Length: 328
Length: 272
Picture 1 (tube, each protein chain N blue to C red):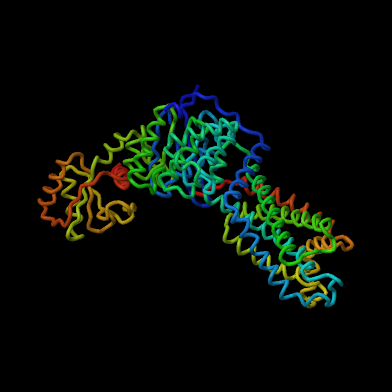
Picture 2 (picture 1 turned 60 degrees about the horizontal axis):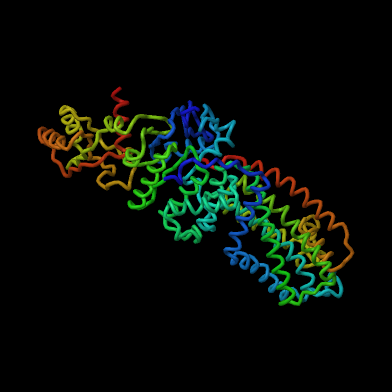
């Protein structure tokens, strides 16, 4: 049996004049997790929609669980589970009834459907809320029910479209653990996320999308090697000092970038990371590099208003990739 | 983690008729879970019944009004039809709402025929409408003294005719919803279309009593035929061409609406 569970070959998708996906190719082996990383509008959801047969590609082809997503859409749908903004549960039905509905539509008998529903509700810690309408569930419970709904048919491949967006930290970690358990059983997972730490924790390999194109692909550590494990963000007292600071940091062997307003999109990250004309960022390998940064700035007499060391975010990936591109 | 593994055989899917049955059951279950929805949907026609029966009661006995008929007996068959038309619009709006909130996305990710989803919605809405009309009829008899000449044998076919009109129009609105995919626009367009259709017709006053220009509109308004048909049946008046005309038009609309709805619904849901 074919052990590549998701195979995407030159897939493109346009909406009128807008190109949502452009020549995307990737491949996911059985039992592994692919993290699809990108901002809103990068094309993540469009790719998920193509792979779950919800949207035909304009160009290229894709196979999921060995079946073509266009010509064999029905076969594909029998083998996948989907959780995301475009696939939700019925708010007016109870948790039990939602899962029974799906099991029955998949072909389970009443008894099998009831048993499967109880089993999943128990697994996702929803037994107490099983008979309440889903609209009364908290955000975390809703997301767990969504995930349970996508697992009813014991799918070979599951698609999780931003599964933790909007969840509180505890629910987020709970969901991560569920996904990790799932992978242990041999399920193949494609997960989209805006968070590098999420992809880092869950994914065996990561594909970064920007403007509908694959801009980087590799394991988390390969990507981080390119991005820098951590980044130092320096706020200068005067924006006029930016060129001098950049020059000095480069001479010190670092790869500094000037925070362009367009680059800082992720508003829910630390406020210090918002685009400001006087902020210079550089990826660093170790915390000892902090000293290098300070020394380099001190050498050229640049006055520093604020200095912050942060874990890498998606912005840093984009920044580093953009930097690599211009350097190449 | 045995629960998650694929040791059990994969279920083999379901036939289209089973899908329709399961999905219809789902909608009706939601309805039973929230009976307020039915009660509220009956409130509007009840209020119309109350207001119109008071405001227009003087019309009985004027030109063109069938002699010996009370206004409530004249009005109710029309309210059956207009309520049915209103319910049909709600059916389309409901479809758009389900498209937006992700329920249909989930259903479409399953190995089922997309048309099952549409047929199931249409059937469950038909049952809901029937329930609404029955409540309306019972309330009209109990509260407003509705007792048409046709008796139960006249009212039953009038009720079925109103349902047929409602069902065929629901397919038209499902088609509009499947293509338009915007609940607000549908609501606005729907109500803008409904009011002239209702008032420029024989629903509330005899066509003969309308100003000339309205009379011209009313005589070409399909609502007039549906209302006349329902009224002829309920009041045991000679059943003219209105009944067969209304049924033929309904069948035509049903067919066109069904084809257009299925085609519209098969288009991809997502656009981003």
